[in-house]
Image 1 (cartoon, one colour):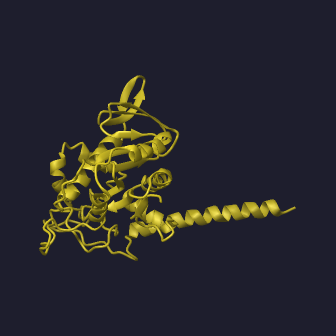
Image 2 (image 1 turned 90 degrees about the vertical axis):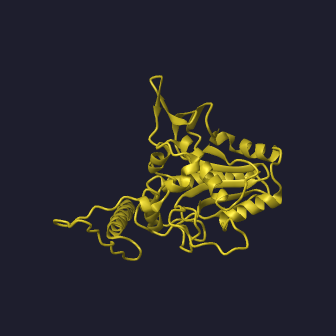
Image 3 (image 1 turned 180 degrees about the vertical axis):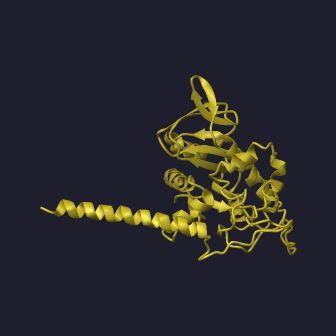
Length: 320
């Protein structure tokens, strides 16, 4: 019996597909690299499912409480807990310590997004998420950077995270099956449940109202709803994640780093704005702002032009 997969990916239908409109909405919220990362994840999930057996659970794209942070892939089983960050990149890269970049003319050039540091930071976020629920993990969450494309070659120099290239994914899974168990099935199941349905740390007591400065406070809001942009949104696939990582904030201080209340105030676009004036809330149509609707209309127009051009080409070829 293969491993269990719990998919919480936003904007996809019951069959796991993401239509054009949802793809545009997801791109607007999470960035241009969002959809390619999802496609890369599918390759990893399929490969792991071929080797890993019942007793392992893979949680995909789960939003952590009210933090706005999405854990890409979290694998839980007898061997441990693994935060897997998947990259669809191609080319030659180097993972050196907690640095990530390319080699140009014999010199290391840091990449725009530090994938090594991001994976390491996300693993620490998972640990804090459990700590907020009063859970002491049997093992530390191990960060894994995994490549989905055979065209990505990674040179490693004592990397801070485990690096797995595309041709070694099955070997990685087989190693987990052969590894010495670090937890029993009951513990693993409990950790999966608390990741999917987090609870208050104080059992048997009514949890207090969620504090605004607690990013992992439980909320009844639907995850992944479209909200005004902030420094949290797009953490998974955006260079914004490096702004938090490179700021020197330690794992113990993660709680304040994702505080929505500290987001910058929008610029007031009025003539002679009075002190203290604020920008009125933008009107939404079908849950989208005017800018998003214009972008959606432009994409639909381009799609229609492509279809019309293809139809014209087929028709012209059919003429004698």
